[in-house]
Length: 194
Image (cartoon, rainbow, N blue to C red; front, side, top):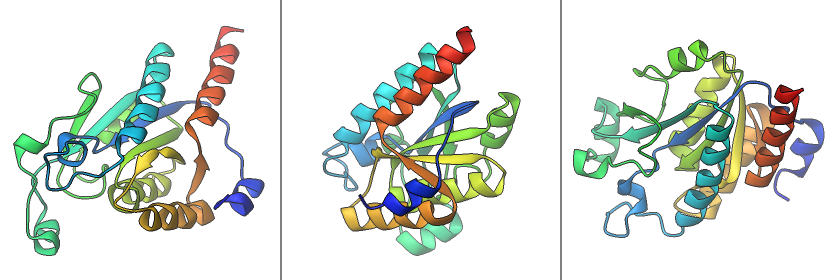
């Protein structure tokens, strides 16, 4: 396992989590898009399982969509994501629009989380090494515990994906699989019912 040493040292416990679904939108998920991420369907399925469980427990679920481009994004990538590519995979969630990597920057995300007394953010979505990693670091410096869901995240290739998660595991985030989060949510649910 890529994160065995880090996982041996750090263990998470869910107390007041929110699910963040980063940029699962047709720009990255449609085979007709110029930015389609082949294989993303696997991450979508796992994210769907998590979203359904969070909904069952009445826990916050927030999705972001990347639309447009900040000045620096435009300079770097030389393109902006048009509205036609901002259709979210999960429209039945709170949707926040952003124009840069960080889901907290110039959005209401922190206010939404604070108003719900969230302590942990569970991050899923695309791309692991860009928007997901930047959001994880931003959440960490704002005082949230961060859990990256390895098999509910996706990237252009496995090197970006695993390198990002390895770096985050060192000093920012717990790394978990979908089933681990579902089990932790079951424990949380049982604790709430006692």
